[in-house]
Each structure stands twice: as C-alpha cells, then as structure tokens.
Image 1: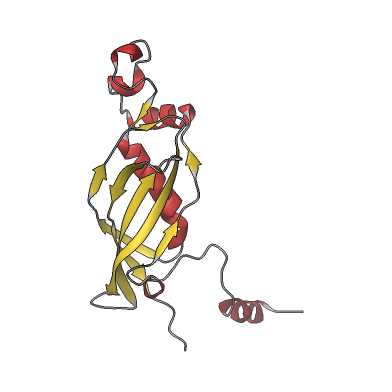
Image 2 (image 1 turned 135 degrees about the horizontal axis):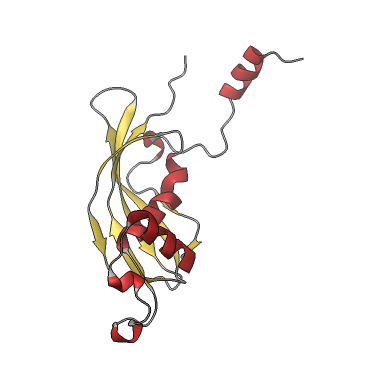
Length: 165
C-alpha cells in the first residue's frame, strides 16, 4: 500500500498531462499551432448576449442584404478571446500574468469559419526577480483556408522550470 507522502513524491517526478510550458522551455523562435475551433451561430449569439455587444452588424439578419458581407460577421473581440482559449493549454499551471498586447484585425471572421492559432515566441527572458520570465509571442489567427484573420502580440509573465532541491 502506498501512503499519501509516497504518492506525492512519486508524482513530483512525473510530467503532468496538460501542464503548460515554462518560460525557459519557450526560447525565441519556438513555434506551435493550436487545435481548431469552428465558430457557430450559437457561439455568436452567446457572445453577443453575454457582452451586450448589440451592434446592428452582428444582430440584425433582416437587413443582411444591405451589408457588404453576405454571412454572419463575428466580432474581432470574440475571435481574440477564442484564440486565447485555444492557446491556454500551453500555459496551464505556468502562466502567471497577462501584461499587455497589440492587436490587429486583418479581415472579417464569419460564422462557419474554423480558426487556428499559430504561435511564434519572439522574446523570452528572465524576469527581474524570482524563478519566472517574460515571454512575448506573435499569435496569428487563421481560418480553414489559411487566411490571416487577426494578429496579436501578448506579453506574459510565466513560471520558470522547477529548481531541483
């Protein structure tokens, strides 16, 4: 029979499934891609209702022929938040703070698009104190056709790898 202390020490030596990356595991030049996420009508309606983002472009189907785009347009803010959700597993248990970003919307996203996030680490360095670092990336959100929809460059405070005792 294994007691709790033995189980805890044994688990300390195992890699946790779903564990995010430490800043020192993400040097500049590191690249990865998220899984995909198809944007549905329900996603759009839920986002609009949650945020009260009731701009006519997003809520009025009756005047759709008067709009430049024939399909339901999705707010850029929604695409950014979905992109962050897709990237979140890379920072599970390791991300400490979101410090800021620049965001550039390149083209409209429509209901039915499937989005992916291509991440490239552009800066990774130790923070001024503690076992943590600053990581900046260029996150490019693309649709199923590879068209760039949105680009943002978050700066995050991320834990460093555990120091052996």
